[in-house]
Length: 252
Image 1: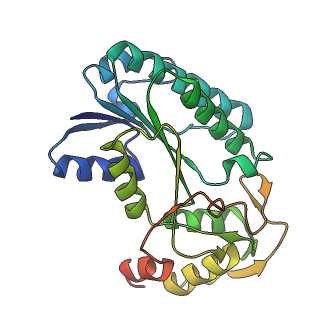
Image 2: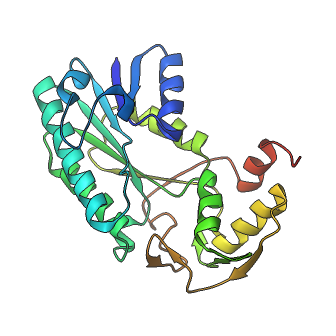
């Protein structure tokens, strides 16, 4: 099976390794490969002969208008090229709760991407994931004022990137679901709690202030926005946050 992955970052680079180890012909393409999904440059050549395309691209700008235009143009070019090439499965990675956080321009853009895929000509699978453990540090940095991190106690149910890779790879190698699959970590925890656990592990000396008004991608959270949808039969990953922290390099 030939699989083409657009995006060779945290998830794409790991998916390549896993799928290649299973004996498949796979390549992950980043911007340095001379392919521009926003203009369509090189896309047709990249997907020629592919059985599966996995879209892990992300906008270089998170300004509301920019990110919406990115996902609309990128997705449209991919689907058009895939139709011409006879690709049989289009997989995207989206976000659990995107439809509940429409105050966020980024979430609106991901919904637009999903809608294009759903209405498009290619059998598809949409994988909605919760936030990755690896980005808790970035959430902390975004909420930092001086030496204090403002973080909401609203719940997040984050997941290890290696578990995301496991599920995305399995879905890419399987039959298109022509629908949405949700995946999440095993624990729903307050974002403030996650940041405190991270700092305890890394030795970060910033203090953490619980703040219900602390935003998330421009939206205010409650305890249900970023956890699996009731009745969605989400796939729950095995790795806990503490397990993931323990697997990282020790302080010093």
